[in-house]
Amino acid sequence: MPIKNGNQYIERIDQQNLNLWYQGKRITEPYSQHPLFSGLMKTQAALYDLQCDPEYQDEMTYPSPLTGEPVGLSFLPPAHPDDIKRRKRMMDHWSAKHHGFLGRSPDYMNTALMSLYTAADILEEHNPAYAMNLRNYYAYCRENDITLSHAFIQPFASKVSGQVDSLEDSITAKVIEINEEGFMISGAFMMATQGVTCDEMLVFPTPTLYPLDDENPYAFAFAIPNDLKGITFICRESNASKSLYNHPLSARYEEMDTLVIFDRVLIPHDRMFYYGDENVGYRLFSDGNFHTHIGHQIVSRYIAKTEFFLGLVESLAQEQNVSFDANIIGQTAKIMTMLETFKALRIAAEEGAKQNKYGYYVPASSPLLASSILFPSFYLEMVDMIQRLGSSGIIMIPYEEDLSSEVGSYVNQYLHGLESTSKDRIALFRLVWELGAGSFGGRQSQFERFFFGNAQTVNFRMFNSYDNHEDYQQLIHDFLGIEKKETDNEEDQ
Ligand SMILES: Cc1cc2nc3c(=O)[nH]c(=O)nc-3n(C[C@H](O)[C@H](O)[C@H](O)COP(=O)(O)OP(=O)(O)OC[C@H]3O[C@@H](n4cnc5c(N)ncnc54)[C@H](O)[C@@H]3O)c2cc1C
Image (tube, rainbow, N blue to C red; front, top):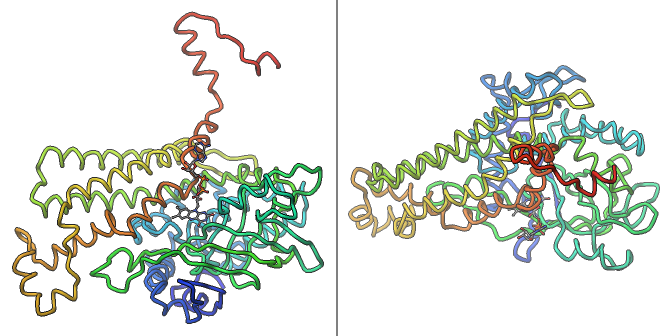
């Protein structure tokens, strides 16, 4: 099956019967009808419908190299310079639809898988069977438009245990047995965003180093359907809502995060992508330019989200009758400046794209990393702006039900704006409340801070993306006319 539409997406997810838990109870009804997931699934379905819409299909799909049928463009490995721009257009269509609020719109994980696929050659040296598994899996996802989540990060205790406990006692995710049918895995993963509302999951932990000169049981990557025996999903507290008026964001974009437990789960041999050597895992990431390809998707999301905030701040300023206050103009100009910065960084990344050793084009990484360093703190600044502008208005926000109740006339009489009705003014302030003060907004802020790694890790990626540190130091030494002291490394050479 080539690209799927929204109904097909929903049908597939509804067929799953996961061991899924919320507030101590197992969820068994179809997920599209469950209040926790129904709003998000409608939004996700609309994204899949978009790629089937004749108006967008040309820019969102390409002919499958196997069948010629249309498949999702987010799976396209950029083999020509123009492919990078084609990918951007496709990502823009999707992010314009979800305004940057979906961290896991389908292009995110499709891009992740595509990037690993482009480096499958390195697995040939490790074990050709794994190279074949990764290539086959990539083709399977592309041809069947599989919706993927990912689980990389483990809970705190699991991260530490592998370093301090014996292999037997360690709770770090590990291969506990290999038999004819596959690899038996036990362990836990802290977070799979949209784990429930996807078909399959890519599991790729950061490997704990293993002191013995043996196969490292902590080093592996695989992908599996969500409903294998032994997998348990535990949901966090939900922000989901059915009312688009009361909760305009969480009724559409509430992506549930789940703790995922693997209790002796059998991973078929043909779904394992590498095993036993942590260096292979690191190389798959770096040679696949994982963070760069994903960074290209992320900056498109940043642009869409910044545009949304710009519109929101301007609408809110107008509603509060302070549009031309110098301070507000300063804040609006700051958002505009950052919007232009993200757009410019994306252009720089695209114009700086280079062919890698496997023949694929990869955007320049530093501009994309710069956007990932700038955005999280700027995002919090924008949240601060709407909190200040919203003032008491974002707290006193009666429900839609109040408007049509006996007390509705009071609400209409007292909560209208200068030119707006109470209904419209409250709608705007409910949006600001969700984003600036509610639990949906709190989770969004935490997501922006951490989804791409903690700040230190992202800074290291940027630091390492420059390989000419010495040249910059030399510049200063030349300017001052002093001789540069040799570092230990240079002396050793
Ligand atoms: C909303 C949300 C959704 C997510 N979705 C997913 C998902 O779908 N799949 C997935 O795999 N992961 C997901 N993540 C996890 C995300 O990848 C991790 O949160 C991130 O990598 C950081 O890891 P950690 O949470 O274990 O924190 P840590 O990296 O352990 O950081 C803990 C604290 O220590 C600090 N710290 C860490 N290292 C250093 C250092 N060297 N120097 C100084 N301070 C340091 C950090 O800044 C932080 O304050 C999600 C996270 C969030 C918040």
